Length: 177
Image (tube, rainbow, N blue to C red; front, side):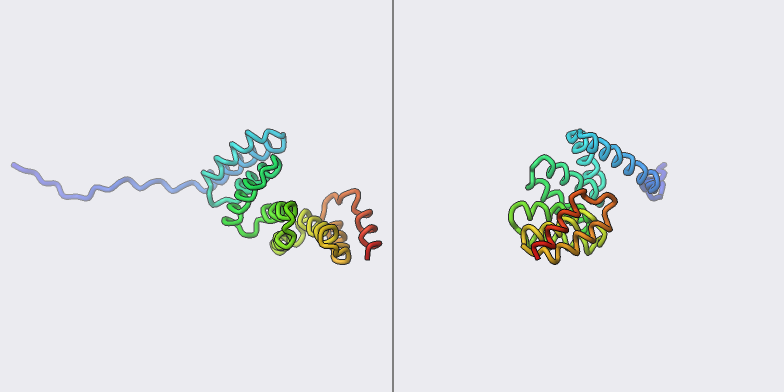
């Protein structure tokens, strides 16, 4: 006697990911990586951010922080690659845009630097580092102190703690007009 069983064999449905738990893990891991970076343990921070970049390829923050670490270590090529990857995920990532502006300025690509700073400010008009960097670029590198003064004053309003020499820079720029 032959018994035939009819039926459909299916794999069990995987459980829905717990979005809140996943977000909490991401935030905790990110916080630990930032803390390592702030304490100067760049190797530990790099390891943690690299893992985060692999685990969360849709998050620009870990990539941008890897760019910042590479920048601090003087590796502009790696920094640029990480910042470009961060911008591929989030084209308005102000820290990545600002740092790419600094990298461009450091190699004499002033038009590109200005484009990056302005893109950062288009994303966040009050992002103080980009305001100040654009002011420096216009004032020192492009010889346009008149436009720089407005930015120096804007930086003064946007920065939580403006640079102590800011008044001197404004005074100097006004004297050169």
